[in-house]
Image 1 (cartoon, rainbow, N blue to C red):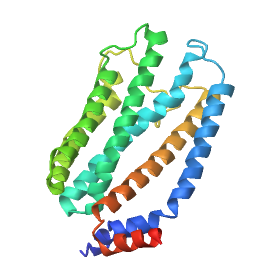
Image 2 (image 1 turned 90 degrees about the vertical axis):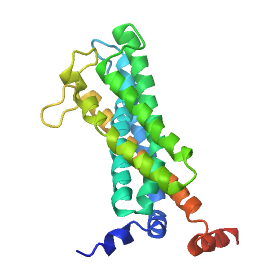
Image 3 (image 1 turned 60 degrees about the vertical axis):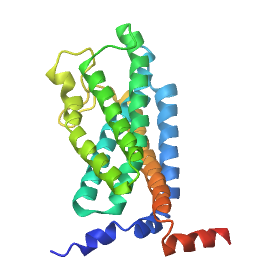
Length: 248
């Protein structure tokens, strides 16, 4: 089978040129969704009959948690592609995804702690879900550290990819932790196979926030990857020509 199309798809130059047109649209869509979701969720969604207004932290906590997990898969899959097919763009995406994922995981942990104080009476417990999310945070930091630990970029990419792939075993643990172990953390309210347990008046702004976070994640990942492309490809003719065009 001819895989030249696959390698052409992973061309840094092709990616940089094609994503020029995507950036403005993603920016408008993500900002619009986040504004609508934030205003709807904080100002118009009703208070919860048990938790009052403290539940509104879900409009940050849940999207951040979703993206922390999905972003890890993106990082790990990119690392696998880089290992197997030696695609430079995949390695760049993997490196670019790690800091974004670490910030989202940190945000999920902090907002979870803020939510936990009025709900459980404490900022932190060694709950199965929280502990596995903390492990995820350290995995992201490990990939970032490996990228900086080696002078040779190829070695850094291979080490980061291996850690990313090994760390994927933690993702199912995070998903199923509330089902496998006794835990203070509440079960999932958003379900694909059955009806969600959250009322539509709270659900709709949450879904908008999740969509906004996904679009914003894509926007930031594209921007970071484009910056990484320019850094690694700075000696190529097309990057030099681009720099001269911007300088003129």
